[in-house]
Length: 283
Image (cartoon, rainbow, N blue to C red; front, top):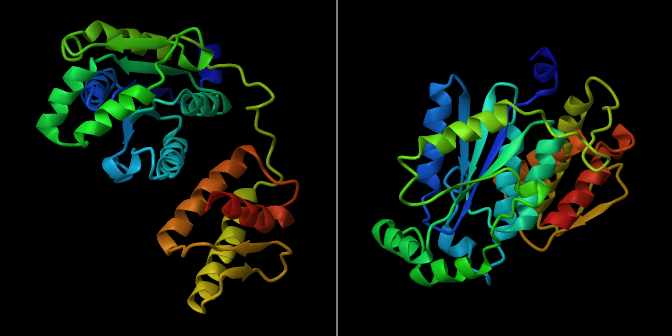
């Protein structure tokens, strides 16, 4: 037990997966209640957490979905800790995104699992008619784009399944999830997920201060009508094709700081240049 306790440095990550209006939120609530009853602290991250407009985000023509996935990923990374089980209640229907989250779990040395709400699309349409979360044609579109989890893939394993008839009554599956998360070791990190040591104990404080200076410069120069942002002492320039409000700049700053925890630059003097390059590739 002591050996297990030493390498379970962070609490587990649970990813919900399924069609829109397939009962994911209901399953997440049931699992949360079960884990709390077992003495665990739980946080649920969902589309509602980041105030997603589902109809504008998940239409294939809008291009907003990538940004939303980035925000969800950032929220997951923010809440993974020694005390909290993180449940991600979202579509998670793209296997590439599930793989990214799997890598985050490996990087944080914590177990993970998938909870798949396997609900027929016809039932999803019925439930959507009752709650009105999605335009009716979007349910069909997303079901066609859905990449079902496959337990043969390591990022989809273990995978637990609930159906509309069992989401409320099948407490055994929540017990299986609990046993899976708390009775197995964390995944071994590999070269792609192992974090190098930070350069100095105050590294993150320095990153926060340096990136805040960039944010302040962007805000100031935008107010003067500049579309090319030059940071004093930094060779790289930021070319803007849109206005970045303070809320978005703060969100991008948080995402960058989270990224630097596992991918620190070679020297603190490179932080601002790396941040500008990150912004340029993201906006």
